[in-house]
Length: 320
Image 1 (cartoon, rainbow, N blue to C red):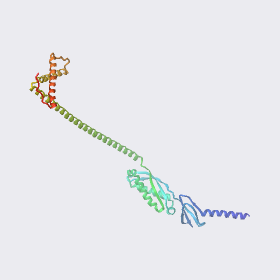
Image 2: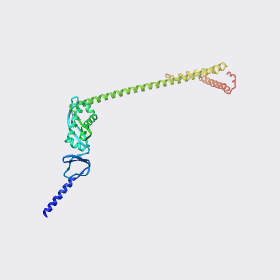
Image 3: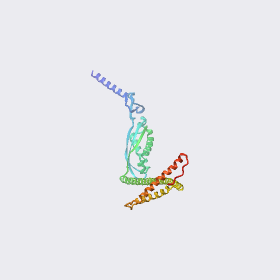
Image 4: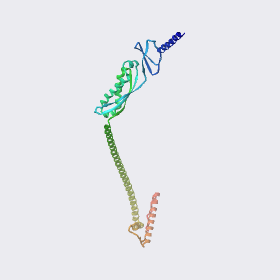
């Protein structure tokens, strides 16, 4: 019984070995190459697969997901002979498992060395200012060159980025001084522009104010002239009325002019800034009489104008 049990055990172990060598489960995100007697036969995708026992075997297990590859830091000399330390990062994805497995040995090292070489080439063709200000152009050039070089390897370089650019300390200090000088220059230019605009606006405001003031004076002059013209017309009309009254023998017209001059003279005497005491003339009765004459003259003129308004011929004025 013991030899039979040993035989059965060996048979079970052999069966399990054959079973595990025949059945292969490929996880998601990976592809396996199948080799038959050491030669590439096919590529199996994620899932369950059956292989020919003792003939077929798994060759390379390739990761088909996008991977991040760090490019080692290195010192690069720019076109204007400035030493710059830079490092980069690349994003790669295997598109053809067989080509990536058998076209190049140590895929990641090959891509890393290729990227370092092209970084030196691209940065070495640019000045320091261009290197610091044109990272997007550098990334685009690196991506184009490296992706074309890795295409035969079945690898797609989806992106490559310059992570850090570090000029020497003295260059950093000089750049800081230059930046400070540029900012001071821009600040002075902006200040001068502001003062210029302020002066222009101030001059425009003064010009507009002067124009408005001149227009106001002109309008006031027109109004004053119009007022003087109307006053002159009224004075002329009053003079004509008084002249007509005098011509018709109305004595009150003469009393009107005398009283008017009398009142104007007394007004100037009362409003004089050097006059502290006003003495009323003794001829107050004459002043009152003159005022009465003015009232009588006004009444007479109104009586003369009333028939004209009614369309009738006025009577001859009576002398007083």
